[in-house]
Image: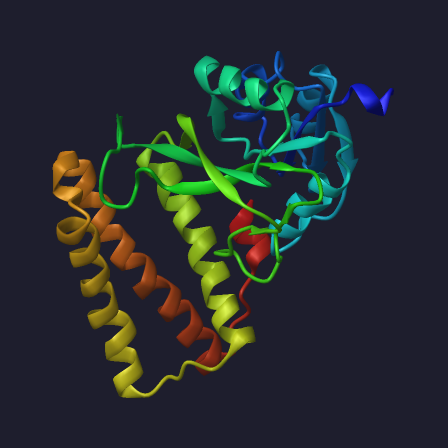
Length: 272
């Protein structure tokens, strides 16, 4: 490979994403000079699909903190610019043109990284409120100018330099069905419970139980549905607000279960 010609690298970390990966790569195949994928030892056709798009595939373990594999994919890229994606995201033709314009244009005065507005699909509609949009994420950046701290699942990229916004939306189809939303919720609540166990003891006294099972879920619902106007999105907006509160409650119950019964938190099982 002539590295001098690699202007834009697309980096992904995946695990058992045969249902999503092809559709994702189809949207970037014409703008990417290089595709780098770290696969967490998938048992389905993920690697086969990745290679069919000419991707460089690096197989590693499926780590609990998947940001580690994402950063490994970023580190393996050769491009002057890197676009980091998830398999359930899609780059529209308009966003692709905007990205390619930045990569191919005059580099004088360009920021270190760009925020993308992510538009989320939930219960049959593109969400517009409730914190679901614009859902800002840093995804396009100059090589060496941004990285994931790899500390926890909620972290944001750290950037060495200035940032700007792109105009076009990144499409996010994480939950095409409610069943998939529940499966993902099970995974993330397990990860949250694990973080609480390893990062600090939040407690299992009565006050803490009430705080995490009643008060915090209620506050989360009010913030999403009223403060962030989730009601504008109709019933899907209501469901998202309710289950965002339940997410806190479920995470705490898993944490409590581990503390009191010493039941193992099987993250690997929850991620399959």
